[in-house]
Length: 188
Image 1: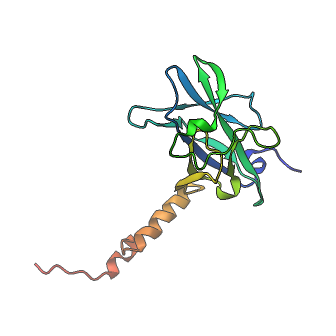
Image 2: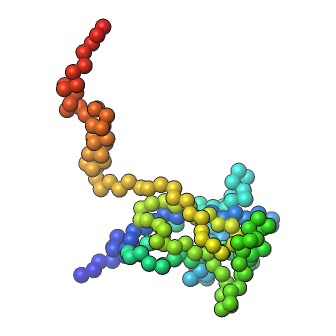
Image 3: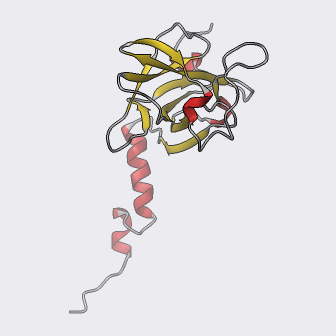
């Protein structure tokens, strides 16, 4: 009988992903939000900037993305919304990318009449690891720029952590059980 625990539902695990977007075209009173493309009327996640990090806007905390159990073509699809004075104003447009990225920009409306979206192939991510996805507002063409921040060490118990530390110490001859066999003498 199958259980509905998070470990079995997530399949291939969960990756922690921070989204970061470069945007130099926002006006006073405008804000940028991340929206899941498959649920555009759902909740939107605000992105923030500081004087030091401008023009980069970042999610405050990483999003937990469930990964598929088998490698395939599943993707996380998203787009950026522009709010003005606290309410939705518009979706990102190719003109938001600025002059530097114009060669990568695609049309906002594709041939089927749908709004173009950003995609992250989930096969590039691994469960328990941390990533940052870097975008340029208005540029949905081409592969995303994904930074692998770090791998998380999974230790199931304090005992396994202690064994890990003990084995690391023995690599350098620091294991206390072997101290008597070192044969050091005082030459003073």
